[in-house]
Length: 256
Image 1: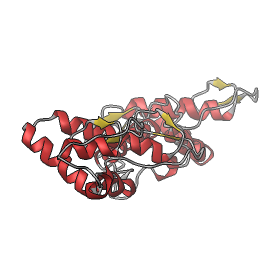
Image 2: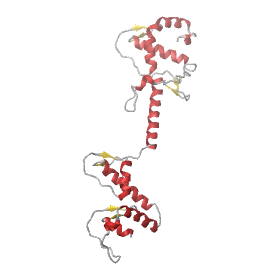
Image 3: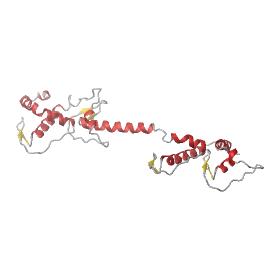
Image 4: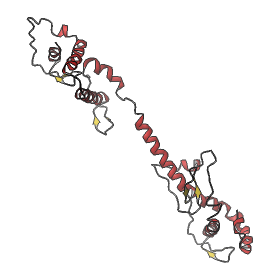
């Protein structure tokens, strides 16, 4: 690792004597996730300079080594080996963040982009992966109300209990339970469908289909002379035309 200092033979030979002592510390420093303590344990380096402790001495030597090789092979060091080059940092990536030092040990990712050190490179990689996963999830969102659709489409409404089991929809709005959330969602979808187009005849046909499913023969039993009189009882029901009717009788009347 010290061949890059051949331009300074005396220093190189001295550094070799410290190589084994600093090797483990260099490995930690290069990872970008380690920083030296400031405990006072004076030591003299191979170049004659005194440092506060061994770790700081090794850090200084590594920085000097990196600067000497800075524009050469060290900057072009590519850690991509086809495996997960960031596996050592994955457990440290929490809440969308990875804490890294600013240690200068240049490295390039698989795209050729240069980063200050491996930790910073991996932090950016993890962030990018999270963003891609979020985009993928949004694009593949399943129909969270699929279990209620057939019931709603058959009757134009959804009968729900008032069971308290709070749930939030995609907008963050809270509902008493999933059924009530889906009732509101499906009603809005039906209203949007009614507003999206279609002739009055198509609307009436659609309402008629819904009315048939409601068994209008039974609901309007006893009607004579073609005149339909519905009670004023309020039991709102939504037709497939997107309109809300006071009760099933009103809906059937509109379909006749």
